[in-house]
Image 1 (cartoon, one colour):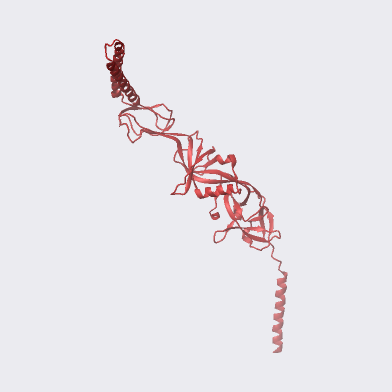
Image 2: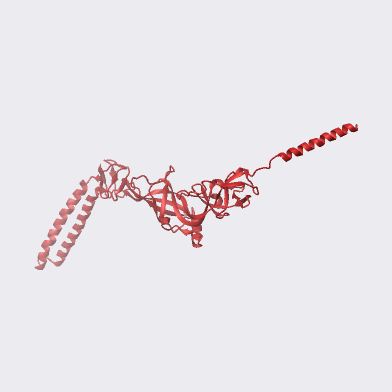
Length: 378
């Protein structure tokens, strides 16, 4: 019995010795390899992308100024017309007759007043009769001018140069003076306006940051505007900011901004939905972090992993501003010289040691035409 117990104890002891030897022979866990970017501060132009719609610089609704039947239309629908070009001809017959009658009346009155002028000196006619003849001549002249204008109005001219749309009437249609329906509409499209709306709160924050010296004015670039079309393509020609309204829309809490763009090929048409990108200010010490380096916790707060001097990992909470070509502008939480991990994030955690190396494409690239506001930064 004693021999059996001894044998079992020996086996257990040998097994324990073998296990400890196996554990001692395992290699120590290696620090995970990661890549990082060393942050640098540089001037960054802050932009904002705002939705808006295009509108014609000038719009003229062509309406008749006399009543009558349309005899002919003298323009091609959808073409370019010049100011002063005839568009319609209204039947002038009745207006021509009225003009001829007014002309005859005027000539008779003028002849009478001329004859009385010679007779009043010899007192062949009284001064009162002469004065009445002069007044009658004046009234006849006014009636003649009215008849001439009405006759002229039978020719409907283009009030402005621009692109004319479809005609709402055809030959034989009866039109009336003062009608609410226009005959056609002319839009001047070169240049063309783009109206956008910016939150009054965002504008207030920007002005305070400029006043406090946190941001610098964008200078000449502040007046330049870039345009993105409905299909996502960029409009080739830059625009210029014309003005911003001084009142806030009470229903939307926004301020309307207007920019003008050259439109030589009529690529932009009134009513198109676009995005306008405006340069607002310059952050002289901007820090850009690649998008893939930024993570969010379960409450939506942004953070990054930073490699410290002893190669350990630190979790750093940050606040982001705008995105620019895949890089977030970080407004707080990071400093120039910090090493932010961009690759190998799945194998690190706060306090862990890492084997880090600088990423080759560490220099962030900025495209001023691409920017947006990070919702988590609000």
